[in-house]
Length: 55
Image 1 (tube, helix red, strand yellow):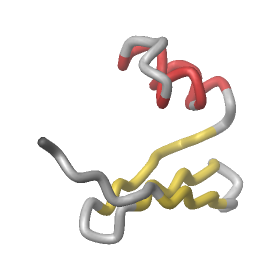
Image 2 (cartoon, helix red, strand yellow; image 1 turned 45 degrees about the vertical axis):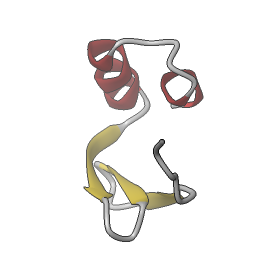
Image 3 (cartoon, helix red, strand yellow; image 1 turned 45 degrees about the horizontal axis):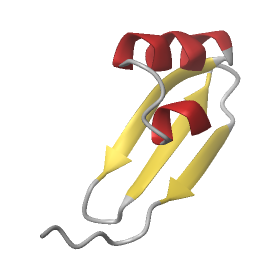
């Protein structure tokens, strides 16, 4: 995930890495600025992203 966040991977590589890590699906909430990753065993992990101001 860190490589993807740094812009060092393609989207297909990101999805494959998620699958390889046991992530069954993820949910992006743009209003809350979070991404929650869900494992096939029911575990979840949520990342919070900082507010970004575009030029």
